[in-house]
Amino acid sequence: MPHFALTLPNGHTADAQANATGFDLLIKQEVIAQLQHTPLGPTHSLLQGALPLEPHPHALLPLLAELFCRNAALREVTLELACSREFALAAVRHGVAYRMQAQATGWQLLVDYQSFWQQPALWLTAPSSAGLPLRYTFTGEKRHPLRAPKPQGVVYRRYLPELDSTITLRVADLARDLDTFHDWMNQDRVHRFWELAGDRESHAAYLQAQLDDPKVLPLIAEFDGEAFAYLETYWAKEDRLSPFFDVQDYDRGCHVLVGNSRHRGPAKVAVWMRTMSHYLFLDDPRTQRVVGEPRVDNLKFIAYLQSQGFAKLKEFHFPHKRAAMVVLEREAFFEQYGPGSAQ
Image (cartoon, rainbow, N blue to C red; front, side):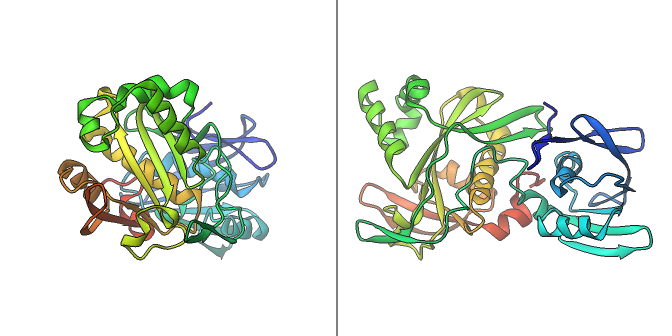
């Protein structure tokens, strides 16, 4: 499948491919429109053309991905389309564009960096948590929203033009991942901070407990199908972290370990950190913060987090460690530190 293709609500596949002057827009591998591309500077591009057939507005997303995903400096795309008012309205309603304006030959649609990267259709590959209506329940004495059932399999996929690689997040599977998880947890550098070295049985019990816990979604991160990290995401409201800060209903957190040494180092840290945050923010638009509590002596990891927009708010005593409280705000992420950012 092409790098930015997606399946539309009607089941058809939408994609875009470069041509001599811009891009072809394809539905079911057939060209339905040709748009001319004019760079207006490092941060702004113009696309112009006619839409004789008007698909679902999400069909524009692969076209926009060819620009935003391949140019980290790009902040806005102007679409000047010969299209109906109904199509322009639908594009705004579906969040593909943030503003529409009438022109003599059709409609102008404005798309910015923030609105593009907050579109889940290109990246989420499993049902999100956002569809569950707000209803409260209790875990022990903690009152929190009822959480959606956990997804299965791959939940997030994104092609990385800068690495010519694809990163995926999938839900951990005990039969498939136990040997890898066991190996990673017994590495000295991992045990130093996780303190979970042990035998396969203890690791099987631990991983099964996370799979069974309604507040936790354990994920395996992969580059081109090769597992490299374990991400233990959680809802903060019902977590043991909640008494230590002003927790909100949809705050999410994540514990991380990179176990595959082939994918360690600063070249890939920004990629998987942004992917982690991107997934958590996309999974539910009500999530306004991603939080963490790394051990205070894990200075390298804290520095990495700060380089990706996390603010260190304080240090505090957990029962099992002294921790640093770090927070990433949704607005800061999508304005400055999103997955396509040059930072």
